[in-house]
Length: 192
Ligand SMILES: C[S@@+](CC[C@H](N)C(=O)[O-])C[C@H]1O[C@@H](n2cnc3c(N)ncnc32)[C@H](O)[C@@H]1O
Image (cartoon, rainbow, N blue to C red; front, side, top):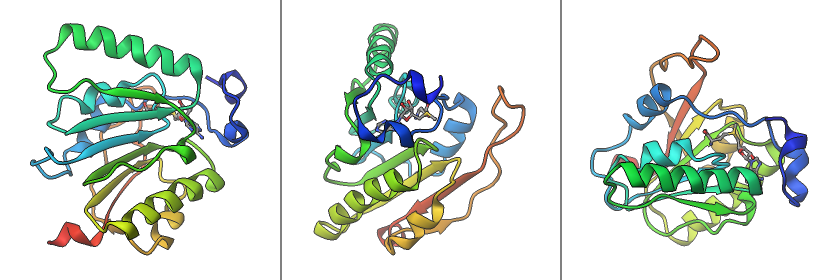
């Protein structure tokens, strides 16, 4: 889906990339870097589209799985997908799609797993990370950031709270026939 087809009043519409869903295999490979004990963690996908990552993440024992999406149509489709997925599977917690601009979403308390698939430009990425840093400074805690298509990783490193961890190449994205780049970051509490 092209940017001009995203139905949102957000002034950040002009900063969005094209809509594309994360393929299941690379997504599960990214999740495999996380600790096994996720019961205290909230998973947040900034720019969650039709909600595929929310359905896949809800197979893990997260405390909460939430996506933030500013397109009214994609958010409605995510809710339909959540309804039919939850009808078929026994999930501990129902994932949530929130209709909002990523820069306005209040950062959840507690341990976090943040996910982005190259959703927006540097301005919006910086806006979201300003919120994440303010939340971390108010309450330092473990945060992982899984960044698929990590175009703006300098913004992440410049926050001064995230360090990059080593990763191996991901399985290919089937629609592209090649793997996409992935970067994994964590706050210092990862070493505790
Ligand atoms: C590349 S798609 C990724 C979709 C999903 N995260 C996935 O991996 O399957 C990026 C998504 O970000 C959304 N988006 C772009 N800018 C946004 C913003 N400022 N606030 C909320 N959503 C945004 C787009 O509408 C699109 O659905």
